[in-house]
Image 1 (cartoon, protein in one colour):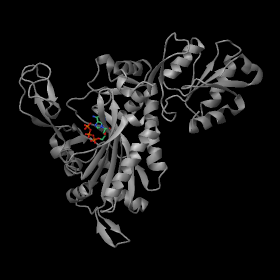
Image 2 (tube, protein in one colour):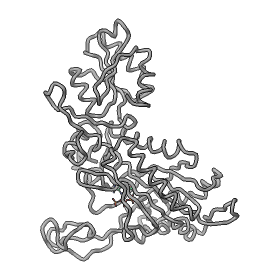
Image 3 (cartoon, helix red, strand yellow):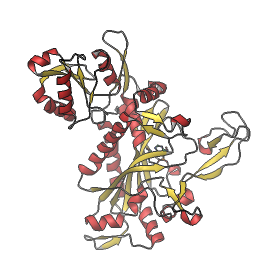
Image 4 (cartoon, protein in one colour):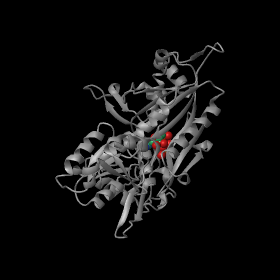
Length: 440
Ligand code: ATP
């Protein structure tokens, strides 16, 4: 199988565009820097990534609940969180060509593009700003949240009282975040608008180290369970100088992208920094009363924080493969996506557009579509249609042929092995469901 390092990003980007996974934002106007739109297959992939995360973080656990906080928050939130003060990168500008760079990304002290002299670094806050209401002054300024986490902290008391939770417990959230990145790039890896999947897990102080390691294992294994090859995943512990202002210890789950190892997700011990800080700035008591020890304290927080766009990109890169097709006439491009992530679960393909086959093929499609993402395709030869489905990662194709008209059975073909089995239409849905749960 193609190694992740040798995946040609140009080919993957072109497949993403050609097949409707990812388009450049506002392309008809020349695009908007580092903002991307997800097409018909991309939105399915992203929804599947989110659903897989939600299932493992919320549904399958009895110690985590969900939340969907608003993107816009009271501006004081970002004072308390430290973002107004310190969510900034050092920006330098070339005096010759006026290009801008993040000073900590540069190796030398000259412009990497033209060799020109650079300005002194100045700190550049990454938060995007807007105004609420008709008056555009500083009293009405709001921020587009740069992370979803703060929506969880400010709702800690609400969730605690409405769900009567006891420590340890977590609050999970999926949603958009915005950062005015200085040097975005690598397709959807670093963008200015993206989605995060974050969970804040509140624990008794003193148990935080142990919980950090449990969550690091859990999150690392989630990527493996969804099919990322282990050799392309690693954990990296942050050096003390890399730690964010709130963190005691942090690990990154990294993926071996074609341009090298890069972060998919950070798992940090945020201590009691956020709750304490919000309590101070808001004047509300955000401590927790421990009924066992009869103490009041600020819980410590373990935070797994991942990006959906980055995860989706890693799943795409890892799944991308090319192989000589059995007839050696052309290359077979396959997205070997895990069946839970594949945008289309099953394609229904009549052998041809013959008028005798079409009604039965439509009947099969209509039977499947309320239950799973099923596509109907009758354009071009059956071989080409199989290739088209392989290229977008569809795990199963169902073919309706002339024999179907006699025996009411169809063929299921599996994407990776290209093996085929024949099943009665009456048991098709049950068979597909079982395969989608357990694999071929
Ligand atoms: P980086 O060092 O790559 O800028 P970070 O350490 O600032 O990332 P966090 O603040 O820990 O990132 O954000 C948590 C997760 O959110 C990241 O692991 C990543 O998956 C995602 N993320 C952060 N910034 C971006 C971005 N600009 N584009 C896409 N995803 C992002």
